[in-house]
Image 1 (cartoon, helix red, strand yellow):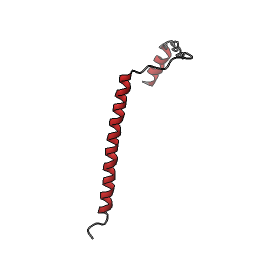
Image 2 (cartoon, rainbow, N blue to C red):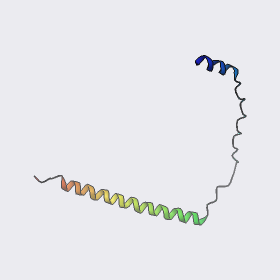
Image 3 (cartoon, helix red, strand yellow):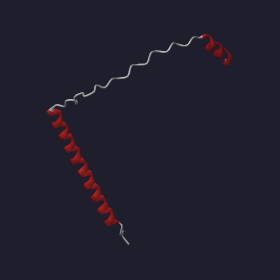
Image 4 (cartoon, rainbow, N blue to C red):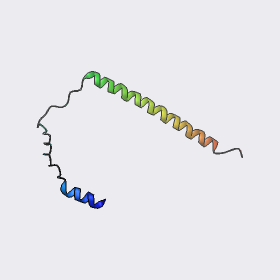
Length: 76
């Protein structure tokens, strides 16, 4: 079977290469992207919500550490 594949490989023409895509051009002195005020307020609200969630996780972790420290004494 290897012989048949090698014969086919030698007889089947390979596709021609395509031209590479042109590189994108960056405009010099281009203006910064515009972000609306509503998008900024939404992002600010999301950041505040994420901060509250992170603080609650940190508080729970601290409470767990304190409880583990209390339990280290054991029953003995």
